[in-house]
Length: 218
Image (tube, rainbow, N blue to C red):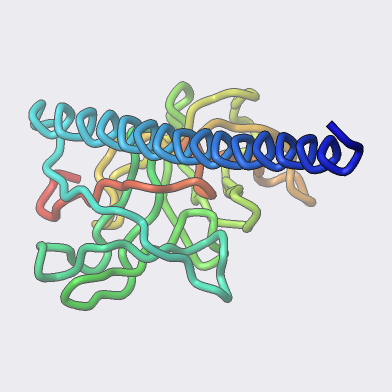
């Protein structure tokens, strides 16, 4: 075999190997793509199954909805869901996940709704510190966090204390988990204590939510 034939033969082998490599790479990429899709379906089905099991317990009646968007100007503090008044959603309807309270419905169409998250600066919730029973007002401060205001200065709240809804004001039922106290400080003047509360629900990673139906006991 002359040198030209040898070069051509080697080139053919290299091209053949490269072609097989590309084919194998595409097949692996496709399999990875399918595996990712199947895993996502499994996780979604698990979340929905847990929601349905919770619904069967009749602790609260609710509508399951999926998050389909976020407000561009309010990226972390409001979401859009794929249910509206045609599915029984109402203005001021409380919204939560298994982990805790998320917010409330503030805008509505026939098939979609906008939810104001509890971390939004316009959000206000009357709450209780579960252990001490101290009542205060929870307001959003952005960045996925809230501030608990107007606790008595003599309150013995501690880091890690659980905060729940107080059931006052006609929007949120009593006893919904909101989050835990992360920091405590006394206001200037020494009249009140203020606390930073981290919501139990991951507000930046919401996918499915529960819209609690109206008519619940407060």
